[in-house]
Image (cartoon, rainbow, N blue to C red; front, side):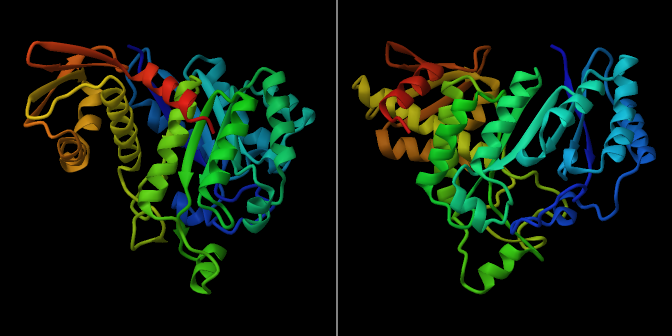
Amino acid sequence: MTRHYIIPIFVPHFGCPHDCVFCNQRKITGLSTDITTTDVKKIIDEHLKTFKKDSFIEVAFYGGSFTAIEKGIQEQLLAVPFEYKMSGQIQNIRLSTRPDAINDEILNLLESYAVDIIELGVQSLDNDVLIQSERGHTDTDVYEASKLIKKRGFKLGHQIMLGLPGDTKEKSLSTAKRILEMSPDMIRIYPTLVIRNTALERLMQEGNYKPISLNEAIEISAEILMVFKAHNIPVIRIGLQPTENIQMGRDVVAGPFHPAFRQLVEETVFKSLFLENIYRNRINVKGKSIVIECSNSMASVIAGQHGKNRELLKRELDFVKLRIVPGKKDDDRIVLAFDDNEIFIDLKYETELYNKNNPL
């Protein structure tokens, strides 16, 4: 199996024409200085030394709105990974930007430097939420930029945020539904955290903003994850990457932060789909010892953080004992065994069925 490595290049606040209420890129990236071409080359060289041969390697520009940077600086920064790509040392170039910083001229430039993936900071497709968050663009900008990116043959990524000022569960689910219309190639889901020294922190202190709870963020993220999984759109990240500073009590002052947020979401999805199958098929495991055979990657999801899922399922279904046996190769299929019964549960099918029965 080919290993996929990402070399992250952070361009904190480079090119951002707006100070969104939730943003403090210097806190989020841990950087306070602007990146240079020398820095980019050094970062790439240092990472390349650590990777195994025959790996798939991608350079990714994160942090700022890359295509809003002055054109000359864009070219200088892109020229470095372009050289590595042409020599075969890396395979992909990725960047993130704003929806209103995409046009044909910009895409011509990115094409000339062999950029592969463009991720758009969509955040929300509700215009009131965008206004209250001081994004400086509308939902129309997202549609137009996405269409243009796809038309030109780039891979398209969308980043969405839950719990922004003015947001609701219904608005977040509506954003997910409308994103499906644009057929992005990948998604990132970020519950809104209140970062120190941001306008959002001030709004919260003034009583004009209340972050969503961890449970709310998990519930909404789980529903959105199931929607995208059912449509075969990979969700490549859920939750902000924990760092030395991105921790509750440090630069995160409030909001649904958890260092293993994605696992909490995935175990919630599993529990919902598993119970849905049990009740629909009238499977009775009361008083029985059961075994679940699964892939290695699913074992911790089934058990849950600190065995939480195990306890919730036991309380709900009233079985005596649950043994989880990892080792199956298929992530989407599990086997439920008890007494002389062996039941196959296809989680992909369950996801599709759930979305059919619970449309957005």
